[in-house]
Length: 60
Image (cartoon, rainbow, N blue to C red; front, side, top):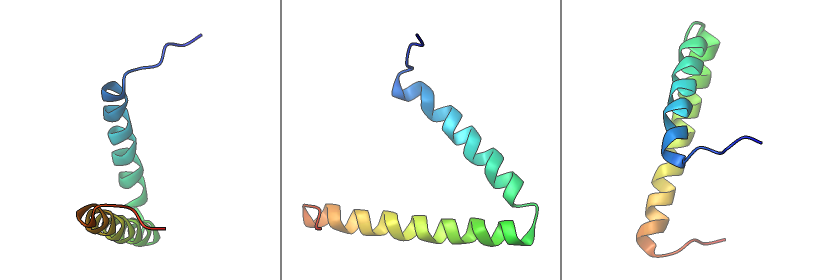
């Protein structure tokens, strides 16, 4: 059985994986378009979450 790592120790590996994937995608024009689209969608999601957090709750 494997012991699970604390959350703080998993984050650096996740960041490293994101960097590797971003560098791999950035090699081609299509990959750059995918990265740009992902960046825009992530930005919108963070802005929406921040606005909902300011309003004091989550709506469904």
